[in-house]
Length: 254
Image (cartoon, rainbow, N blue to C red):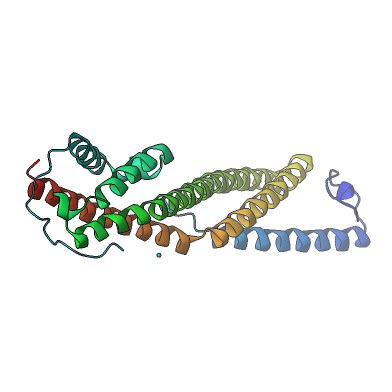
């Protein structure tokens, strides 16, 4: 018996063959119910990789060169800012690097900084470009992952809505079936349409669930964690450099 035949009104004259076909149809419907109920019962939508650690003091000679004063002030101003502002701006990084390079080349014999301190500043200048690159890459990864997570949240909301709609249709179907049982003369067309709609919603739900599962599997959680650690490490180095530059100002008496 075809689907179209199933939804015709019950004839007043039924044969033995018709009864067998209806029994087979009811078994198919029950099988559909088991599959669909099991699917929605399984859904659980929740409320959803350095600077040397040197603090050697500078020699106490105090050069009065205005250019040195300006370079030092510039470095201090940069280091007082949030690291991300500098590291994500190549122009600001270049200015900071130029000032660090200038300070690292000051000779202690001419009232500048000690050789060891010069090495620390020079190392910071070299590391700056790497910090900027790594910080930028980490930020890009974090933004990408957050975009994936946002999409996952949207899918979860959509799935919850799908489940709610399914349950509403189930309730409607139950009412219709009860009406059919109470009055066998009532047309079964509406019940057939509800079952068809229920199957369509079910298939839509499976598609949403498959996309959500695939997205959850592919979200690079490890990369997200590593990116956060990279930023934290750079911020720590940034703080150490800030302390070193403060020692320069103190020892140069600027």
